Length: 212
Image (tube, rainbow, N blue to C red):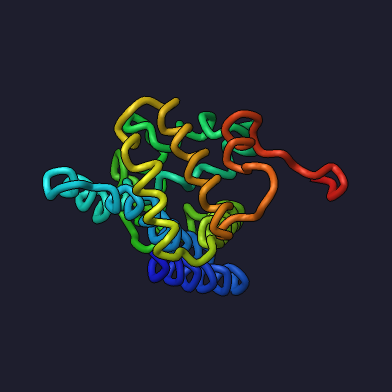
């Protein structure tokens, strides 16, 4: 997990450098690669709870799928639209959603010329503009900003969350609260209120003092 996150940060930094040099199509495509690397984290967490080869096989397939790894790229968009509680972000992982395919297409367009639709030839710089590139680089930076993961965290994840990953949402949410509580108990999360419980029940609380 830490290797994936480190590589995601490297790619995000490279994309930011490309953006600063007005290389918008390449910046967008490299940012997408960073987003895919960050997306490995969620899949690896689920793999840690796989109890046999049969349950692990489809997860390894997801691990090698570009669209399975880029689902979280709409997270800032959902937040901007008012999403706050955990359940309001579940749309990112809807198997019928089009946004993973869209980002994969953007990645390809940013690298290659192509012929689309009714003999419509495209070039990267004619399709990918500064606004899109900037948005994707910002998203890549956000997703690659995670902290280092330690073994104890994954062991607690397997204990509390793993048994509920294929169950009901309420059971999974209960497992997440218990996981965070024990993380606090061993010093891996800040003491005080259970931030996961707050996220699930009340949503993300922003600071008015900071003007957020």
